[in-house]
Length: 173
Image 1 (cartoon, one colour):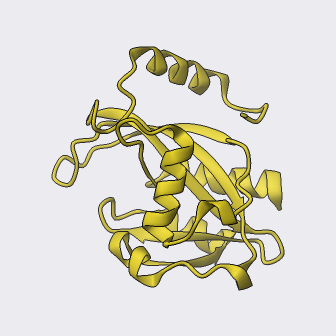
Image 2 (tube, one colour):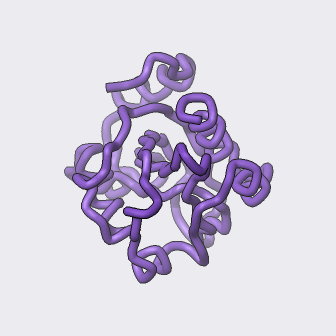
């Protein structure tokens, strides 16, 4: 299910992209769907973000949809690949946000456009123990940051992650 306040222009672009099919990175390395999962903690008003090795940006966890996967399978796989944890142990919110990211990093990946589907996960920090080894495969560092710290780290280079931070602040804090 999708929340009611999705940007209608972005949603229309998603619908048009869905008609083209070939949504996975395997089917279309240049333009495909990605799933993000954005952890937050309401009591500390913090988010869990990392400094991504490929992009060089501070962002939330997530990844490309692989061939023959549905979005739920991608989310479950990515949570395991990046955290070493079982997605069934989390209360993952309904799909909350859609963004479209233009990618300009030919040296590191063939992607040109990501159609991002955002899921938000309320985390109890004392029960959250992602694998440092798994996180280290994709991130230079990762951890809990308050919103001001997160925004400062993100800077002006990643509007989609800033939009997710603002979404969390508006909806959950």
